[in-house]
Image (cartoon, rainbow, N blue to C red; front, top):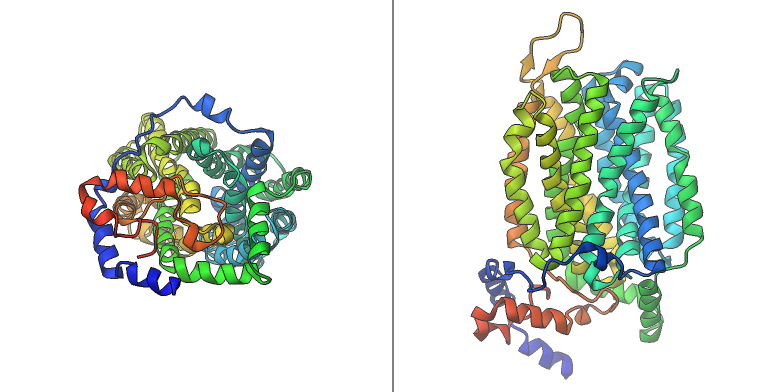
Length: 495
């Protein structure tokens, strides 16, 4: 009887969709909290919460390091394996394509059996495959190892986001999200630095970089072994045990049924975001080396500057998103990033340092909001799975970004240097066009999307995902639609 009454009082999906679209502008209103000094905010975390954040950051950073060791050494690998740059970029594409498989496997394991052991298994696989990459002798072997690497890499993101954020104080979610996400930029930065230290100075060249990459995951595994499960995960399992015998399966099914359209939205959004990051980064070192004839040292310095900008941007926008809102913060970053495309792609003097710093500041600034944005939209019982699968299916959709850029770049040949046999292409023009389209796409999708800032990250039941704080927030944001707010389901409820 109660179910039928609840169903009859619930507005139709057409009514809720119309309300959702009507409130896309009003819902961008800042939440009313001031932008606080980040240092007192960070002091809200206790020792346990800091340790969970640090181990998650370490895992995500090394996942990024493992990925970028290929994109940074593409010309070296191509020469060693008697292949072309375009051939080697298929190794990048394979990794991106197969990450969704890893997100599916390790996401389910992380939500069903805990954050700890799936994370440890993931890192152990990293060790084996990093060593294996350093020993490949043929192009087919290279593709095979990188395909397996894609599965391993896909499993880490959702687990790390859940580990770092689900116990985090509400006031610190934004800045911790930004700091966690910039493990991606930090991994890129470490890959650049160690590539310079090992690829050009050791007898085995690029292979030494991959052998080195197998070492740090050992320390990350030891770190995670010393920590327990997060309190939020333990509370979710307690709620499941109290609700039914087959709690995880039943709650998982209910969550998928209730949130299927949110998952689709997150996948579409993550496709745009991954096109944004890979489109601006994967072939940029190749452009500097092949098109602009940067020396190894200048290339290294430029990429270090880019990633310093990325780290700063992710932390800055993640932090202000607690005051401005998740969507508005991303929209601001995209608009400013679009304005920086021209200097980033076409400046040829020392001003390129400033251009690449601020372009990556905006790209990764938008990304800094994503871990907490996805976590707040996901049902807690499947947080690692949904956050991971949305991110990695977005990666799958954008998997050919570097290959697309390399292929289109071949249509814009430049005059080759007499001292080099390497064909030169105008990658700068291609990336500028590509990034303009991507920024526009992300702007539209994020503007039309939902937001669930300040969501409860522990309650497992889908129907309880809408808490009082969100109801009050939506009422204040949509006050001009007061006639509809009381009857319409809150924004986070499925349309």
